[in-house]
Amino acid sequence: MDIKQQCITEYLTRGTGYRKLAAKYGVSRTTINKWVMIHQGIHNLPPTQKQQKYYISSMNSSKQPDPERQQDFDAALKQKIALLEKQLQWEKLRADALDTMINIAEKQLNVSIRKKPGNQQSKK
Image (cartoon, rainbow, N blue to C red; front, side, top):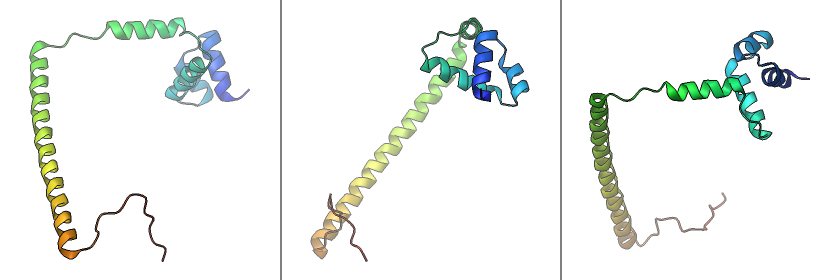
């Protein structure tokens, strides 16, 4: 049995922690965690008691946001949205200007500048 399978089996059957497995097999905890999660997903296995305890405790420990910090965060987001909308408007104007320049150049020079869809590059 390879290291990956040994880690998964030992975690699921004996409940050995990721840290102990990492020390025993010389593989990082995150790698072992990924192996176990993928194995559980492939085989439709339910989370272990240890996993349920961890996930439930991490969901319950989340703090309610401070209203003042939330207002600052909202104000910063609104400011960023305004900046992005301004940049988008500028880029639209730029695209329109470039499109107009190409149209004028094609008419005056009587040369096709835009690439036609489906055309292939000429071989040299």
